Length: 118
Image (cartoon, rainbow, N blue to C red; front, side):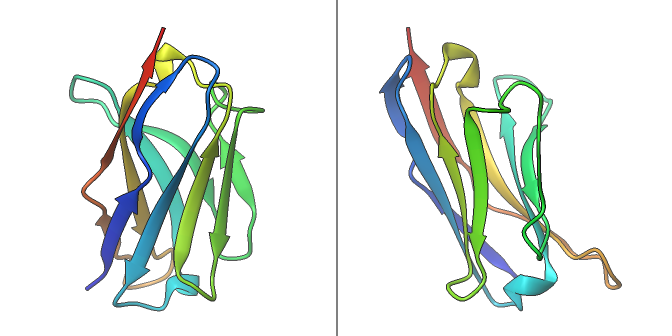
């Protein structure tokens, strides 16, 4: 079993910055591809950014150039640095851990709210 605990959300003005963290426990962190998703009011949860165990990152077009995903495999922590925030970035942000080899475990954190005021 993997536990993921997000932190760092909050209220920020347009143009501001936040850094989200996701602390993982109960697993070999480096075995997992890690990602951040977000969910605005409604059922859809969208991928924001993902990073492989080796550090290769991919981003949604809407956040490219503004957000940076990173991971510390020695501390079992995933980060999301968010700059130049916009009201459209307002959402609950979720940390995700996916093991790309069998067993293909998939875990979610509880989410952290990010609100960007205009």
